[in-house]
Image (cartoon, rainbow, N blue to C red; front, top):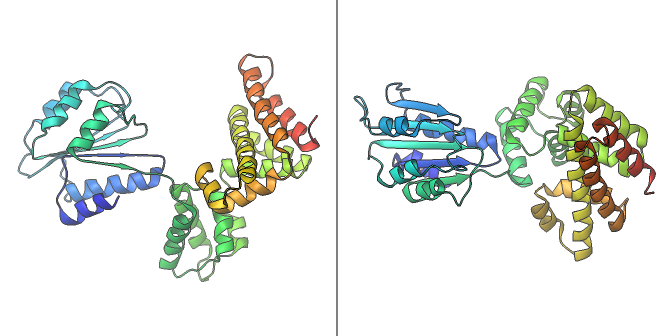
Length: 328
């Protein structure tokens, strides 16, 4: 990311850029900044955008070979093309000798680092992978956005906010804007404000359900499940997310036995450190064998639904009942 920032600041751009990764908000920001820097006047004659699979390679190369019209540069933005997952030899070969007036920007959801296109862009320009940000970075970024509006928040309440929004920066930005508007005229954002205006991300609702199951609070767990169904959340997605959470409990339990520090656990699980503390609290309700059995039960439930032996809504309900009552 620093290299792209330096290119924008210096005005010395590479012929090609590939932006990809799970952190969509950052990827969109850098894409926007690159396009704006390369095409500051919004020149529609020399800027072209392609999106989606099925782009005609010959047509694209012909456009690349077209000199810019009364401008120094031709900019082509290509989004979610599939070029970095599927075979695209003709374009990969063309990338070896790009015209000096051309700049290609690829913004992709999926990338295979073994593909010829990945290697071609790496040789010709810059590649930037946008990964989910760690806990400290998210907190610093969110506090900065609030600070610009003259608002403060405690670390404890910031943790509460992140448990609701998850690590997605786009979702976090949206919830921060709601908080800023809601607290107009006040300089402190409180836990009560967060509980009032912030929407809990589906995956975080799933964790609340897991926590209720671990606490043996069957009524709350089922109520949360029925709430998700009311919100039109597909039962199979709920089953998948529950399985993911129980696998995290199982892994966390293993990490404790291995003597790993919480920071290392957070890195391996791909979650912020404060989330690890919540996972460990839930994991204490079960033995390692029980959690291993739970992981197997979720796999079996998914198979039963797919083969028609069990109805999807019922499969989740049975697992919630089983693991909020103890292991049978």
